[in-house]
Image (cartoon, rainbow, N blue to C red; front, side, top):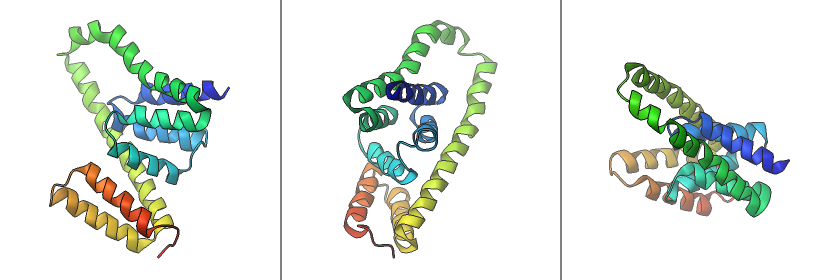
Length: 180
């Protein structure tokens, strides 16, 4: 039954996650944290940070790791198949229709209508991460990491993967359990 749950969790999240990786993250979080409780929100946020720092599609990295944690090697394979299957099916079946209707105003409107929903889902996820970071790390570390990350990304234009790596190193050195 576990493999069926792994498949469903990732298949549904990737089927409904129109727009790629950023759109699927809140859906995967809902399945993994809220629905099946395979991870807590803090573990999920740490996995997301590490997955963002690594090359490749975020959903497949997260699917492979979570599938492995829950069901071993077979769980990882099942999660990866479930992650890739919706896109593969859509590409095979809908390719002809997509090329026929690509200039349709209705299709363009539908695509633009989904974008605010994705933004709201990502905003809610960010607020949840912010709250758990505040609880787990304390206000000083949270503010320091937030300010340094903001200026690193916006003012100094440092690559996001390097900022994430720096935050991971900071957390490994300074956040080994004590809350300030």
